[in-house]
Image (tube, rainbow, N blue to C red):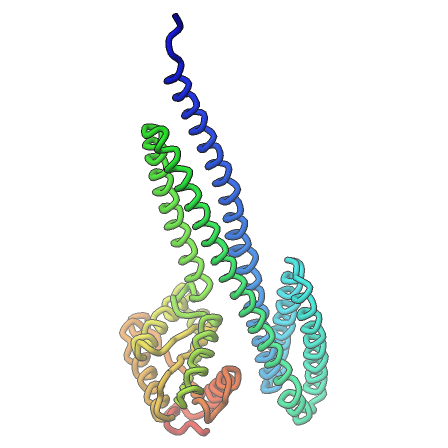
Length: 402
């Protein structure tokens, strides 16, 4: 007499169904997670790369325009040549950034915008080169007229186009994130459904599976924390000066734009201080670059100690710093802040221990009296700084002409 086969058959069938459910779960998870990985890769690698290229192009365009202004203002031929080299380098960065953006691939709509932008870039380049020719021909008044009437408005249009492109890519980035979240929720729902079915057929296998899943979840969380820490470090590196820890040019422009939008909306004022250390090259030459770096770091610390928490100090490069003062009442607030900085630098004991006498020439500008956009304010503060540097050493801030 054969033993009954009902129980073994039922158990075998249940096990086979369990295997099918687990296989279906694994297969679905594989494809869904693969889709999620592709969306995350697109979001992180492509969109962020395009945003970075657009930002690089915009910063280079700002530098190119600033260099053009500096060429016009420079009285010394060698200084003019230095600015001309900076002008050409910035032009190369604009071209390389746009080429890299095009090489990443554009949609038909993006390609049309890119082609229209190319025509604008060609116009800007032609006008800027004609201004250069006028400057070297000593036709400064004509060059200044073309700069104000043609070059700067076209540059502002180009900047607006780049800002619009960056906004679109950020929106695409957000859409990719939302799609990734939807995919994750769908994967989680289906995984739980199949998991519950597997648990009903074999509690032991389900328990082991859940234990492994918890271990995997902890590993993923640890990896996500490491990824977030890496991204935070990259953001810090991309927006801050590595020597002083201050905001760099890119972060400063972003905060200045935000402050201008707030001031325009609520009718406030913004002050800028353009700080340039006097005779810093002599410090590097006589004491070495390690002392120069120490001086820069200490100056950065002093600048931060002299301002409010709501204000921003940035290092633009070399021995040039800029201070953004938000919510000022008038020019006297800027003068008071500049005098406070001068007094802090003059009374610094660290400088005295090195036998150094560190001073700074500080130029000021205020919104909206000296300019209605970031470039105009920076140019006004820079020009004021040069007037201070070439003027009297006593009562420089109080007697500063505006």
